[in-house]
Image (cartoon, rainbow, N blue to C red; front, side, top):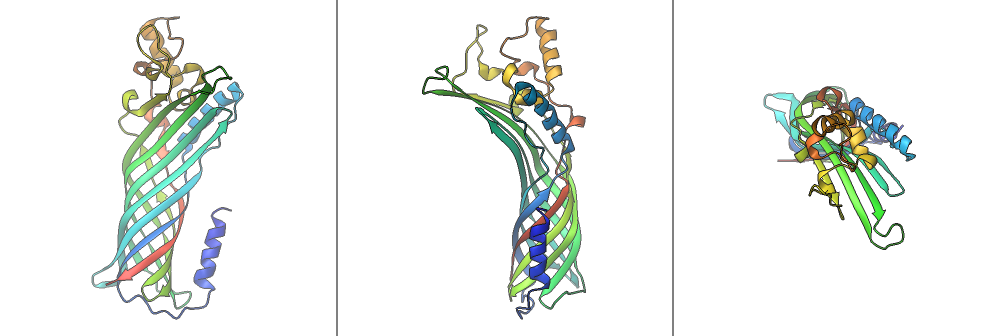
Length: 308
């Protein structure tokens, strides 16, 4: 439904609105910018959200929704292929993102995904025109995925005065995974000529963007901020440890069982730290259980300016 409304409105403009009597753009090289709606696969990420939600239910807290959609923004340049007037090549930069989360009393939990890509396409100008001022293109090409990321964050706010003081303590635990690789896209584009050098551009395409996360370490990929971290007898502080009793990211986006096993094997049964495991023992989700898959449908609407 969310996709159908903007698509229907755009098609009405392209095919039903009377011709503006603009001529085809004088120049062939153009710059375009567009944005719109995207759907995502993200089955592995949603499996982790489901695991985290079970822990939230055990705590009596609100669960968070799975991630299925987000937003995409593109900038590109389009150039005609020499001697082949029916073909164009395009290349540019784009970003995609999506977010899920919620607030339950003093608990703020979010799961965010994002993508940065360079994209290229070969487009064929279809000979069919639904009306004089509309041109249709079909084609596709590679996506060079520079960074595709999933980031889970849990912020907990507590009163330093036991519920009566004015000062509050805020603790945030965050874990992220990212990777890069090669993807693909294919789709249909349409342009409605508003002026001789300006067109309304619509892009409907499907992309394949299934990426395995890259190098991971607890020192780099786990972030802990605490406005008033407690100190322990060992000389370390809560900035070096996850809060075992109150950590969504530990349950949802790390391997909690393996982490506890690492700590027990190192310190001995019954000697686990009462606050939680240090970074030394944190275990990432196995790569085969966390593909960052932003494959899906995308619908863009924007403007294209022709020059030269």
